[in-house]
Length: 133
Image (cartoon, rainbow, N blue to C red; front, side):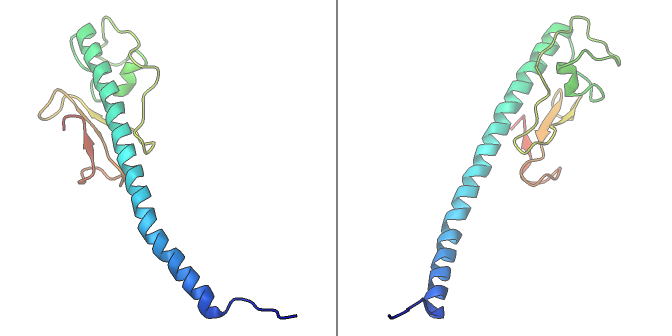
């Protein structure tokens, strides 16, 4: 009975071929995943912007930085207290990476700043996603 197995060269060739395939396929999959997360984050930001506009229309002002986006879910207890507050969102959303959005009001060039720190998780880097872009 002839027992024949794989030679070391054959095993190495298979490993190299699998490595090449992984090098081609993995970046394409992860690139699409990042794109999908960026789009999902933009959709969340649009929902927050809509809620902020409703808040302003009802109360005449946006929540302050101190009140934060939580003011869209619970009535603020720190001034200015909104006179016609109602619940604008079920919960405060997070970006697609599970992080809190950055909210500053008033903003520098806009009534408020709303952004995600993006895929790298670091603020003020090139991959940040801004609501005003």
